[in-house]
Structures are given as C-alpha cells and as structure tokens.
Length: 109
Image (cartoon, rainbow, N blue to C red; front, side, top):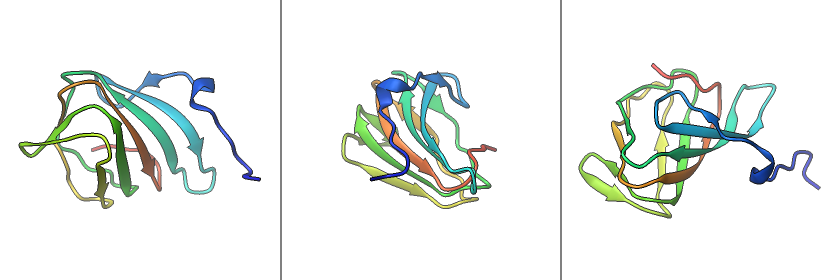
C-alpha cells in the first residue's frame, strides 16, 4: 500500500501563482518541499516566460489545448523544464488541465 493516497475530488482548487491558473495540491514532500499538483489554466490564460529556481518541473497535459512557441499541444504531451531554465510564455487556448510535478519548492521568478 502506498503511504499517501489522495483523490483529486477531496482537494479544493486554490489560486495559483498567476492569474487564470488554479492548483490542487495532491501531495507535498515534507523533506524536499516538492509538490504534485493538478493545474487548471483558464481559457485565454497567458503565463509569461519564467524560471523555477528551486525545482525541476514535469508537466503532462490531461486535457485542453496549449500553445508554446507558436506550436499547439494537446492531451498526452509531456513538458520538462530543468531548474533555473527559463520557459514560456504559455498560452491556454482552451481550459487546460495538467498533472505537474515540481521536485522542489514551487517558486517562480
């Protein structure tokens, strides 16, 4: 049995670090500060280019259409951004839900 089990319907959406982005924190690692989250990007949300100085980020699109560098990505796409590497801007063409893992604290610059 896994020591931590969470159903997404047991967790409320909370405002994310950008307007038009909500988070459901499914797990937080007390040792590293890393988090596993569902992210909801409202249709039309535009997230500026940014850096996560304390964590690598892996994001997997569960639903929706996401534009990155002039290319549209949909369900089944996986993105990875190494800690300290600038990425974005991101544009949600429709509502986008992603499963995202930050292996350290979720900070943005």
